[in-house]
Figure 1 (cartoon, rainbow, N blue to C red):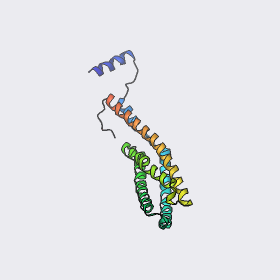
Figure 2: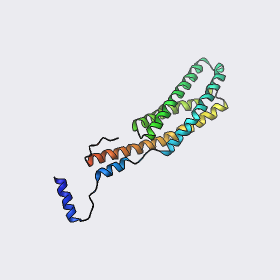
Figure 3: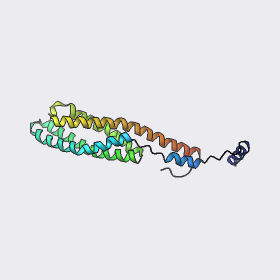
Figure 4: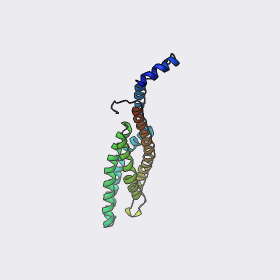
Length: 182
């Protein structure tokens, strides 16, 4: 009742002013795509690089395995397996989180990148007792560059997506829109 009274009063005071369609504004904001092109490009190129990294690292691991000490045999194989498995999971979550604008998947991608991949990639690149070859050093350096690019662009994409979803949520509350938020 109060809303109708205010609308009719504003129509008398300001004739010809069109009624503002709040539901349309809400849906227009919801149709804006907030996925990150730089993150998507880095993920795309990293997806193409990953098989090359995998086979080069596996081949060089096989060549240097007998030269490593017993503890470094265990550490090297463990790091290789963890990096390979987490890289597959990380790339999938990055694609899904960025393209579908899903905040939990994008946050998992960022956490795996920051807390698991980055320290392990730095370990394989810096530790000299793992006997890295030139090919392994080059491929790990390129992977590290992609990883740093994805961490930075993923942070920006996560922040933008969270701000966009928060704005939609607040508008839905303000305009009392009871439709399901996608």
